[in-house]
Image (cartoon, rainbow, N blue to C red; front, side, top):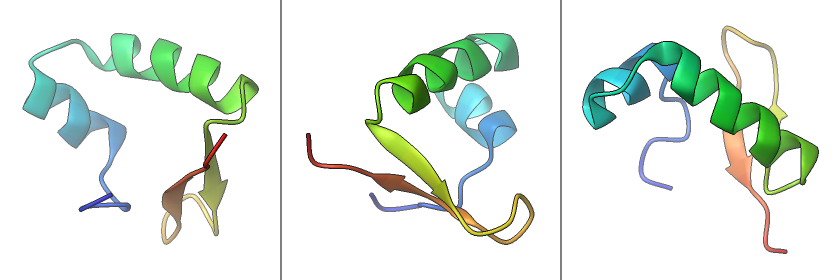
Length: 51
């Protein structure tokens, strides 16, 4: 991933969708263990898991 520390707001703006769409999709990706948060909310980053 080129920007593992991208915020959900930045991602929503980049994809031209509502932030709620990003949150909803992240929830599914987290539940299915495709992504995980590493570190604190403010200083952490997203890790993409090989499944």
